[in-house]
Image 1 (cartoon, one colour):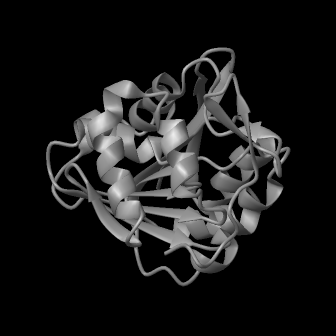
Image 2: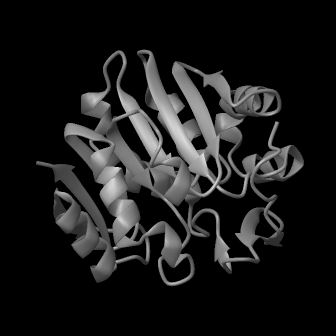
Image 3: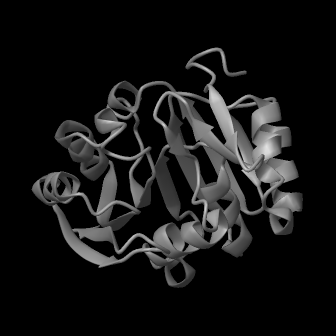
Length: 219
């Protein structure tokens, strides 16, 4: 399936948390990955109140698929999810990462079964599509428009290409009117790029040791 993109080179923190050697950054919070996902991406986009049939969530940085799993856990109506990923995990890497979240075991098994065979698969009520390749190239040609974005690349200091102004402008161009984004980072250059792209950006309390995160709405 994943014949495009490169498999990530990983270390494992405490045997459970995958850390990218390329970007020297963990795939999810060492202080509680699922709780951070719920705080940053689900609450940051106010998804519990917004989900409706056909609602479309898009994401930069699929990683372990944890954000998709957390979304599928709260989705009670059919929605869509598109994620852009340059370095797709091998199935065994993903299975090892998912072991850290036993409450998601049924959904994660469903995710892995689909991920192993197709670029499009279902997890719970979510119709997911994985777009493999450099988002700076693949997003430009994407015909979709998201109602909410999860901006979840590795740290802007370590993975700057996934946060540059041109890509943030593409995110805005592929966002429906009134659509939103949320991200764990509060880096000034990222907020400025999103504001320049047409989002009203707010800095709000982050998760755990991260004092701030960012969220916004397209005008």
